[in-house]
Amino acid sequence: PLKTSLCVGLPEYPGVLMEFLSIFKSCGVNLTKLESRPSRKGYGQYYFYLDAEGDLLQQPALLAQIEAFSVFYALQGPYLCLNRPE
Image 1 (cartoon, rainbow, N blue to C red):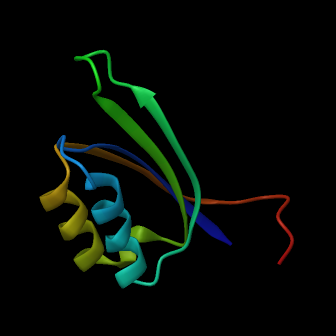
Image 2: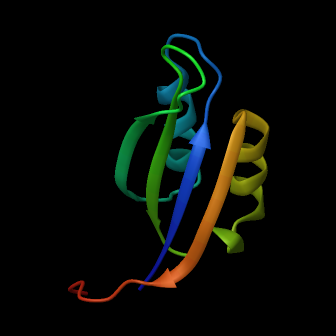
């Protein structure tokens, strides 16, 4: 199975993470990991690291929504996920 990793910076307002995650739900993409780390650009600003099942490069509509919604994003993958039961 394939996996894709993302790093995103989001605008700051209440409920922004929930709105961002709803993009994945509406496209039927399962997230397997979500972490936040301070961006070191200012108080309360974070980068979010996500792992998603599948090849997100095959979903241009999803990538367009991510790009439009986020302040910054970087995509890594797709790559093969080893040692994972089918």
